[in-house]
Length: 303
Length: 226
Image (cartoon, rainbow over all chains, first blue to last red; front, side, top):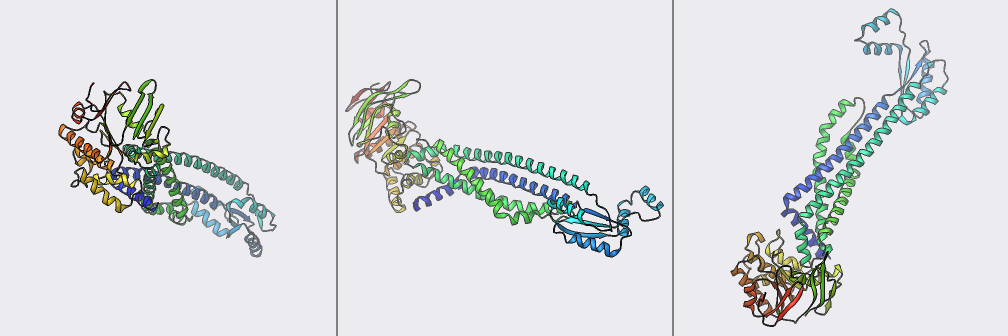
């Protein structure tokens, strides 16, 4: 048994080496397939991050009365902060609101002129509330509605609800489309790899026939091909890992520039989930290769 | 040693490759099976190595009825019969030595034993100097010698040779036939399938002639009669 195993490994390595071009072609197809799968995963991670960042940008603004006393404002701020769904609360004074307004509309002289004519700061102080979890917006809004204080001027959050509903709908559609595309892609990849392995074994059909002729058992014929397919998968995955991380390193600065104020680290995502992502890919691809090898060898090794 | 009893084989739709063939080959015999192309010579060989299953009759080798042999038992049958083909059937990515050793490796022989047997059989066939060459680096005659060496590693009691000289020139043909005679001298039963008239006539051994899947002649010291 041990002797047979040693021979299977030896024949397999010998076969890979002596058919080096065929081996390179097979491994290249595996690399392309694996790289595409990982690219798809990257796109999925980025799109999820994009949606989350948009959701995070949706703050709840609680408008306060201009003449509110400082204690009243602090009391409201404290009540809001103590809510379990709240991540952060920031107080924006009338003056700060005006500064931001001017900054935002500095290229629009008409609006600034109209503001000047009012001779007074019409903006109100605001509490900008950020939720811990985007899915808890509904609960948070109803709790904020329950807070009773003379300092609160308005609490109209209907627009947020609509936006959140739309984003949730978009998220669901993106996830569904992503799942369908991924499934199609995985199927195409599996077929590609399956075909590639079958072609490799088709080229070996004469050899398989000769092995049969000299009395090789079915398992003795199949095992080296199975072992080769595992080696092809392993080498392919190794190459993809070596290529993919520097590629992510190149991508990261662009992502950081695009998602300002939102912490997206694609390298950490792949590093933290290394075993789950690449282990699963190895198992799935090795299984596809093994099945393809078994089917092809069985076909050509009939008595 | 070999018994074919009323063996028939029909290839679809209705080509009768063998028709009620009965043949007894005794241990140590050298038998030539002759006939024109398509008369069933190769089908006889294929049925003896379990590559084809006959439709009727019985095929018995050394008392073992292989007529309805299970697929899993075919490798064991082939390890006991040496086979030589016209197109050599050597593994192109293995050296001649590795090709010969492979026949032993597949049945789990120990490396030490393989190292003893392989050079010995290579010497018998006169290839001791070319053991590390690949099949495409030697002549057709030398390839056929390597195939004979491979067939001999299991010390088979039967050696089946299907047109072994079909791809060889007259000098190589003579050398291969002499080698087969030498092997037969050691006690191995040799079944030679050929349509080479000169070879058959020179041998002066038993000749079985097939025509349209039937045995039309069986002579103890025969000649090529077709």
